[in-house]
Length: 297
Image (cartoon, rainbow, N blue to C red; front, side):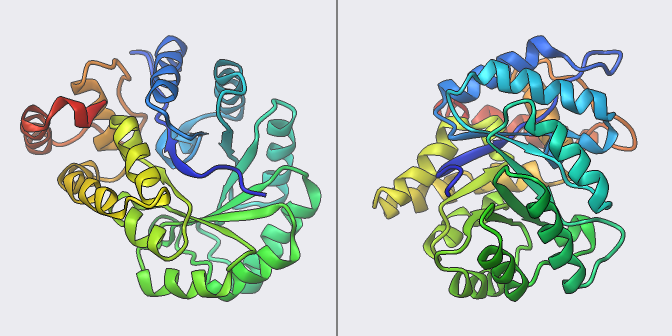
């Protein structure tokens, strides 16, 4: 099954001054995404700072998101970790909240082998019924799902339905697309590679950019999928400077600072993440001021 086509937002988690979750702002952000035609909400993914949230907080944020979205678009919850058993336990708790699917990042720090990755995802898939999108981001986890392993997992597990590819390696993604035709949906995990991955048969993006520009990111993807490749390429290039700026420091530092600049009081980050460097704030502010306002809708 396909969980969604188009642009899914890797949603930030807004905090109050005391670092508790700001649910009022979270609701505002969710409504803005839906109004901007975002095709799915991905909550408690990397951009949502789950590494510094307790299990109780994550479950509360996911529950709030599911209720606020109210079946308008799919809600996909991050449930990855570096213990297979704990991922299963947490995923079962999420399942009871009514999410549409799970985003499960490769186990970090452990540096599992390809066989370890195969057994990790297979064991999770057999223990839960929810559809799963695997998340491959070697730069953050030290672990890379090779195309052959991804294909094996997709072929052998009906509920492993997709992969978010953020390796940045177009050659690897090309091989993945060649091997996985029909057994895995491919989503870009990098906002600067949306059109290249769509051109290889990808069906969407799980996007940081969508926090800032939900309508523009949706239009970029859907233009390509609907056959208007020229418009999609133009939007990809038009947003490139902003995308680069959103990754001038480790995600989600720049995107949270940017949302604050745009008037959304999303608060600060939890340590060990820190505020964006002043020189980057100045550069981002100048960039936002010269961008057409319709690009930030």
